[in-house]
Amino acid sequence: MKSTILAPVLATLRTSAMTAALTTLASGAFAEPVKYVLDPSHSQVVFNYNHLGFSNTVGMFSGFEGEIQFDQQDPAKSSVSVSFPVRSMLTGWEARFQHFMSDDFFGADDTEVVTFTSTSIELTGDKTANITGDLTLNGVTKSVVLDAVLNQVGMHPVQNQPWAGFSATTMLVRSDYGLGAFAPYVGDEVTLNISIEAMKAE
Image 1: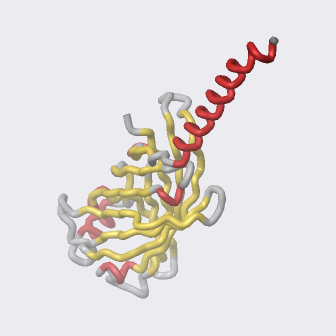
Image 2: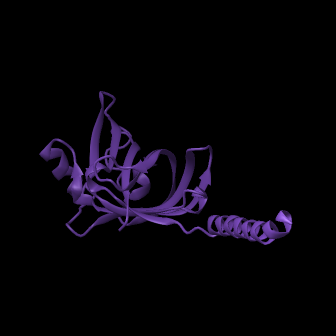
């Protein structure tokens, strides 16, 4: 008698559990990438190059803008786009900055920007990937590959919102972008070290 009374209840519970499970699977299968925007105060591109064999000189771009469409369940479906003015370059020496902005190198005014837009992401490990994208620099667009690492994803302890951190490296040949003045005495190969923080868009 008891089993007869409980049968509809158990059937309802089983149906509810199955519905919940299917809903969870469906939502996971069709989850959309989440938009993150770069934190300009903690996003930098540091570049270095050999100077006449005597030193490795360093400069930086910082305070730039961009966004990441981040699919944490399937990172290969993520994407990234970044842009920043050439004249946001930091060298630590005003005369060097002015030389870089001269016609020897960029000949840049306030409107000239550097852009990077990803075209594909290939996972190489649990937290590593090769991000291929189009880099436009000095009016020249070429495909480059970033060796990227996901540092951390979680709640920011101060901002109290979802946050993500990434780092990446790559190497450019500056003469490929019409910036080859004084090569090979000043190194033609420029190493980039990239550090990015991004917050979930509101």
